[in-house]
Image 1 (cartoon, rainbow, N blue to C red):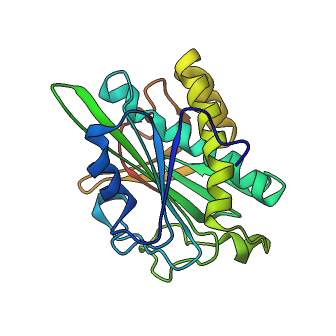
Image 2 (image 1 turned 45 degrees about the vertical axis):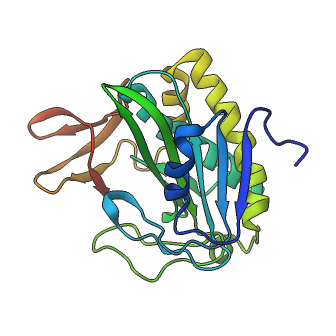
Length: 247
């Protein structure tokens, strides 16, 4: 832990319902950003309320903080977290090849889903009280369930043979996040956006973006200055704020 970032707290819990629930509990009284790691989660969840399976040996953690700025700026930390995850995984494996970032919040390894990010915040009147960045990584086991049409899950061990303990992985992730967070605060979203795009999956290729009501097909052109997915479709250029991506 000699490289643990200054100013960040650390809590390691044997068991918890979910690290996001724990973040919501401690968020109102938070004095500094802090990581919450669970050795076992019993009620883990992903985007849109989906259950997130956490077999033993996988990574389940949440970073909780009190960020400055409005909701739109705060939401850009999903890209900050994705870059930190990419770097931590590259360090764990000893190489970055095979890793890529899938908009809006997944990390892929050899084309399969290795990790996911979930952001939740609280606040009133446009002001953010606290932000929770939940991160799950299939270090040892990939879940069996696969959403129809979605990218299939993979594990770090299964794809690389590398075994990393969750606490060891946190020691890689926390410094990586602190470095990207410092850059985001000092320089804004532009360098984060450029770095994310350099690692993006399927950039320049045909993909599908889908919500509960609509579906767009087009070429993944870029991510804009607000973090929107930009597609070149048959009906023109379209910026999409939130959707599930399929390919």
